[in-house]
Length: 98
Image (cartoon, rainbow, N blue to C red; front, side):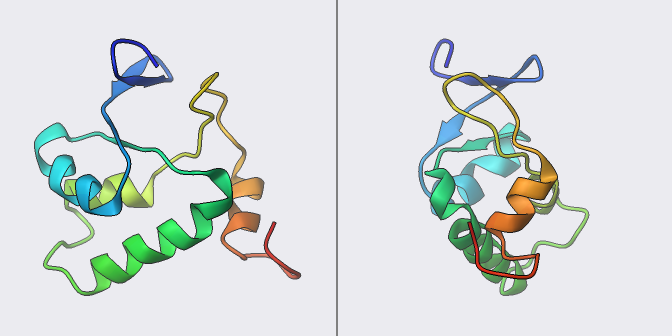
C-alpha cells in the first residue's frame, strides 16, 4: 500500500474492509479495493451478488462494474491471481472450493 491506497496495474484504489463500505464508496470513487482474506473471496463475492440482486443498481452502474470486473490481487505485492484461481474460489469448477 502506498499513502493508504492499494496500487494495482499503476492505478490507485482506496481500500475498504467491508461490503457495506464498498457499496458506499464505489459511486463516489468509481474504483475501490475491498481488502479480504483470500479464503473469504467466494463468500464475499456471493454476498455482493446477493446485494446486487436486491438493489436498484443495474449492470451499467459503476458499483456493478466494479464487482463484475474485480480482480483478486495480493495486498502485499500487487500480484493479480489468475482467473482460474478465483474461479476455483467461487466453486466454478468440479470439486471442492480451494
